[in-house]
Length: 412
Image (cartoon, rainbow, N blue to C red):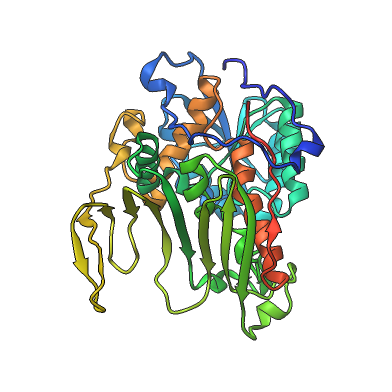
């Protein structure tokens, strides 16, 4: 494989907590190098760890990847990984893989959320590139540890965030880059997933999900804003809601909330509202809307509305009080199936999990390594999606107090 992507220009510890003075003009659309140039002649040799969420990707279909090992503590899940990725080399743990494997360049980590940083650090320290499931960290100190490890090793780290690659988010990102919104003035996102408490217990024992704070799982929402605008979130006030459930009275996280509702401020002063709700009479899923002064885009809604586009116009109407107001044009919008395009190599041009995002995650990681480039959701982006939720949870614990969100920097 070609020389690994290296991260230049270290960011100091002090600068981690200093807000950046610059604002990105927008998150650029990453066009896979495979489409426009020759591929590296050597395939990425991958190990996959975690046999639940880890089953849902397509590494064995990618023309520049070979799966050379799978690892999982549970024998039945290990067998499932082996079957899915057509790989007969099995390890009983990540530690065993890192110690024994001689033919692995990178590791895809799909283990429990509290283990993401420890497992990522172990892989980086063993000289492996890392793809890691969300969320990337449990606290701000872990965010800092991860960035320091990536800088020290010079290896590639990518977070497997699905919302970045949802077909509606790709569409919104293109609209933003083309100036279709005019001036973006507001963004809203919701991740609603009632029923997660069914995963709180397994064989009479608590799982890592037991009482997990909703705002510690923010990336499905924050990606809708940060990946489209390129901005960082700088301040937050958040309200939490909980009830008398036993899991909220006694859990490893001291978390009293089922739901969190946060109001963020961005670098340029934009408002971003997000909700992570795990209880209530609501429909599930991830959804977002991007509001501009010339055009707005509302992604799909679990209640059946959308996707739609609203455009400003010259026509007017009277409201029920007799006052004249503008009457924007309203139209249904067909979101392109980007997974059918040359954004992906031919074997991966099929629909996949989380609104078509899984094949994109697969390709983005493998292609970034094969072509020695920075992945779209690198360690700095991963932390920019994760840290705001960590601070939002602290705000909710303080009754909605306005708190600053640290800026951990950007790739240079």
